Every structure is written in C-alpha cells, then in structure tokens.
Amino acid sequence: MKQLSLLAVMLLSIVGFCPAQIDLGTNNVRYLTAPNGFGGGSFTTPEFSSDGKKVVIGGRDGLLHLFDVESGEHLWVSDSSGEIEPAFTWSPDGKMIVSAGRIIKKYDSTKWRKYYIILLDHINASTGKIEKTVELPPILAFYNTASIRFVEDGKYLFVLVMSSTYESLPPIIVDPNTGELVKEFPEIRMHIKVAFDELSKRVATFGLKRGEVEVFNVEDMKSINKIAVSNDTTIRSVSFVPNTDLIIVTYSLGGYTVQPRFYLIDINTGEKKVTFAGMKGGMLGGIVTSDGKYVVTPGVQAKFNIWDVYTGELLRVWQSRKLVAAFSVSPDQRYIAAVDGGTDSLYLWPMPEMSNSGITGEKDIQEGGIVCYPNPAGSAVTVSWKTVSKSVLQVSIVDMMGREVLAVYEGNEAVGERKVDIGELSNGHYLVVMRDGERVRTEPLLIAQ
Image (cartoon, rainbow, N blue to C red; front, side, top):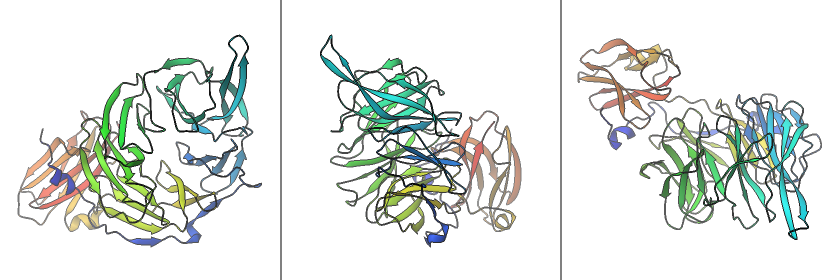
C-alpha cells in the first residue's frame, strides 16, 4: 500500500474554510445555575452523558449537579456530600453516575493503624439519589480520588488516587458493584493526570512538571510507549484521536501563558506528526472532538479556538467572554460546557457549525470536487467527482494516518462516479482523497458496518 508523505498529509486541508473571529455574545450562552447555588466552588471538569443530552459537574463539597443540556434546567443535586472533590463517571448504559467523593476512617487496633476508605456511590441518573454504596480497598493516608473510569466493556472500574502533594498510588481495577480488588499494579507509578481513549482500552498518564507522556493498555497496564514531549515543560492535556494511534498533547514552558504549544503525536513511535502554531496567550488544554476531526482549545484570554487535527490549521476563533477553568465537548459536538474561572459558574456555548470539506453538495461539485454517499457508509459507498484539470486524476481512500487503504480510480475522467466495495475495511474514520495535478480535495468518510 502507498503511504502519503507528511507534505501530502498536510495538503489534506479544509477547503474554503478561513479563520474567523466569531463573537457569540451573551444571547447564545446558557447560564446553568442551581436553585440554592452550587456551594463548595472550584468545580470539577463537566462530563456529558453519552447521548449529549445531560451534563454533570461536581464541587469540592462532594455534591454533583445534573443539568438538561437543551433547556439548561437544573435536574437535581445529589445527596452525596463528602470531604473531597469527587471523581465521577457515567455508567455505560447512562442510568447511573458513579462518584468517589466521600471518605470514612477506620482504626485497626490489632495493628495500631488508621485507615482511610474511599466510598463509591452509585447515583441514580434520573433522581440523584444514592442507590448503593461500596467501599474501595483501604489506604494508609488521606488521599483524593484522581480519576475513575469504567473499563473492559463496563465490567470493571479503573481507579487512581493521589495525595495532597500530587503523589499517586498505583492504579487499581475494582468491581464497581462490590468494591473488591480485581487487579492491582504495584510496580506502576502514574502521574497525577490521566486520559482515556474513546473505548477505554488505553490510558495516557502525565503530570504537571514532567515533559513526558506514557501510554498503557488498560487491561494489563503494560506500557505501549513513553513519549518525551520536551524537556522542562508542563503537560497540560492529552486527548486521543478516535480510532487511531494518535494523541494531541498540549504543553507550555512554564505557567499557562508561557509559550503554549501542542502536537499531534504517534503513540507507537513518539513522532510529532503535526505542530500547531499561532496560539496567542495561554492555553488550558485541548480536546479532540468525537469525530476525530477537530481540536478545541480554550485560552486564558477568554477565547476558544478550533483546529484541524491533521493539518494544524486554525479554523475558528471566538470570544467566550469567560475565563475558562475547565471544559468538555459534548459527544454530538453541539455544545461546550465550561467552568468560568472568575466566578466558579457553569456555562454552555453552542459549537460553531463545522464542515471538514468545502464539498458540501451539488453546487460545490459543479465547480470541481468530490462527494461520497451514503455517509456513514456500510459495505459500499458511491464516490462522485468533477474536475476542470487536464492532469491525471487519482481518487483513493486513506486512513487517518494518511495511508492509502483503497484505490478508487486513476485516469482522465473529468466527471465520474464509482460504487466502491468497502466491506473489508474496519469501522472508523477515513478520507476520500482526489488529486488532480497539484490540487488535493478531501471528503471525510465514516464506515459503520
């Protein structure tokens, strides 16, 4: 199979899309408030339900608040008040929110030891009531829960805890229904922050002061690669690109406002595929959208930026009017939920409409371009094109690493159409690429068989 050069990958740009300053204004913002206030302040990162219809956030008082995304209605506040800022996650079926925000103390008189036990609350997503509480394995010091996440197809729960001095204990995997230890990895010392891929099969760990990222297989916690991003840097965030072996890593050389940078990096080789340039001021991190096409980065100057993952092109810049302290993007890419760092308030902004190709319909293809349908596609897809170039035309399907996986056409047909059998290709995101001389046109294709 052919493989695109880095230059060719860079040419897979978004046609007809220029950076624009968009002022959303206050009319487009949903202000999410609780009837009796949030209390506790310093919110956690908000987390959307898998269908994007609900968003939950927690405070240092251990309470969770659930909101309806469309209406902004405050649905409930949990009865899980605790001593620590909660780590929480949605259950795979969306019916429960599992939270670790309460701690109890126990004393073993036979060993003259005091133990701390983190409680795992199963909160009904419809009512906010705790339906079940189980105890996690005891620890010897007062620790905060850094992260929890359902893994192995929702059967078990990955748990990482850390101390007030940002030292983490070895990660463990537990049974969420009993709290019993299933797997432990005493030899693993993770950094204080983690990020999971879209299927929770891989986890990346990174810290505040070390310029490296390490990626593990979750099931056995075997290291895939330890990636040295840069010396003396502060890693701000790691976000997996869905259905690929790529991650977006954001970092700065000091505080949030000191030379913010980020890269598209190959997990297996550590190679920096794309360098994103043009970020002004500070950057709090980056999140890849669920379709794997865009990176959303908020800045400390109250601006949001949207970038193309594979070209590094800055597509959108808009004024958020708020100082963003934490944020997340809904799975359907309709909203950004963000915590205002100035007032500890939660807001929802609508995402700008995006298109990863200038070819959006019949009008566009009349001027030269390419379309594919149906999209998403199953076992077959129809590819249509038109070009005014007299050069030899090449049409192919490439994966998100730029590797050609299927040749569609090569010849001199200025206007053409082919029905292509894609039954042998794996589910995921691809690009249909048309080259006519020096011009390159692309159309995103999602295969879902």
